[in-house]
Length: 243
Length: 243
View 1 (cartoon, rainbow over the protein chains, first blue to last red):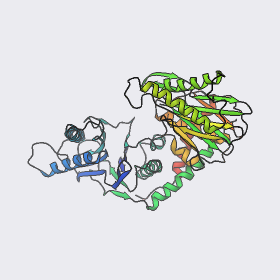
View 2 (cartoon, one colour):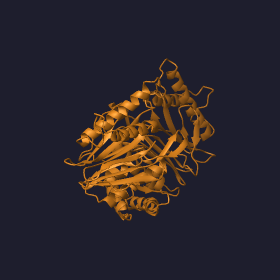
View 3 (cartoon, rainbow over the protein chains, first blue to last red):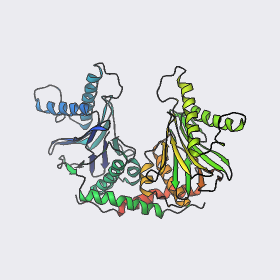
View 4 (cartoon, rainbow over the protein chains, first blue to last red):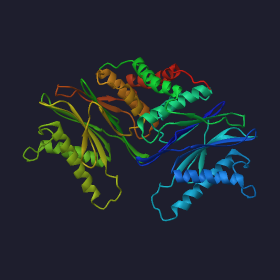
């Protein structure tokens, strides 16, 4: 499994992913699941990936290679005219990769599946965030559903639902995501540190470097340790029932 | 799905279950998933059920019927000498029911499956809590793992892990379970009100009547509304990162 979140704010989009991959309980490795493309000043995009690692790596490699083969007729992620077209490109690539593997005789339904979150902005359009399904279709975040999670989504969802505000500052959003990731990491072996984070500031058309949060990151430790105490205090602040 | 929790405390065991059943998104109904047996002063037991409703109802009916057929040689849940034997009896009944249905040609692995939590006390032994698997085997709660969840367990787990204390009073445990259930109900359509709760006080060998918590229960509303605010305050109390 995996845990990734893309969170739309009024002032931009915040992306976070874990880096653990596993095959069953073995083959634990660390791989990047947060990928970026940009033409600074013109477009900036972040892709989060969950699912079969061979599939997600193939998709990212194909997208990457196409940006370097300039003479192809097909548009690349660095040349598509809109974020909607970027989502179509990623979704189509994902579906093709899955189909290629699935049609070779393997029968298991979900073996090669992957799900992705694509967010960013292309000059002339607003920042947009998409959730891309293995079938090659996708949905877009909206005012009512302003964030997407993929992978091991359940443990970290309640705090996102309760504490998210579209007007949040980036620092608050980072704190919120760390709490959500910490709850997930504490409950599920397939989600693990380090974490990758990328903050896209609306209308900047450029991405800062990816911020990697290691297990010994002092701020992560503060949140991880502090959240348990804060939760207990919150719990104690609620009135007791009469039994 | 379903959500049920059995929680061992120093002073007894608290049981809570939701009551929603569903087949896919349709056929939403309300059914009891918390069942009790007792010989006041001698034994008291609570069974929580999750999974295929036909299976769980058959198991409960079989256990119930046997207590009324006095001339059978097999022990009943009201005559077994220990909680361990009670767990064996329930587990064996569960496995038999699943086998009966599964051997009639149906192929789907989990269609008839169910999982159960059995807790209680029989005079001469301590209070014990078991998690019973559809295969007919079971595990027992311990100091290190003092509670079991079945059904839709993930959303409500973080708060249990963080706020549970074995020395809790029953009122605090009820509050904790309501927070855990509220988080689950807010996130998953297959878990719904009303809730059933039963508190077993250690060495009492008797059960109070089941406490049903309806959607308009004033204390549940207080917790459900108050927890969002308390979480937000807890979240705000954590320090912000420097970005």
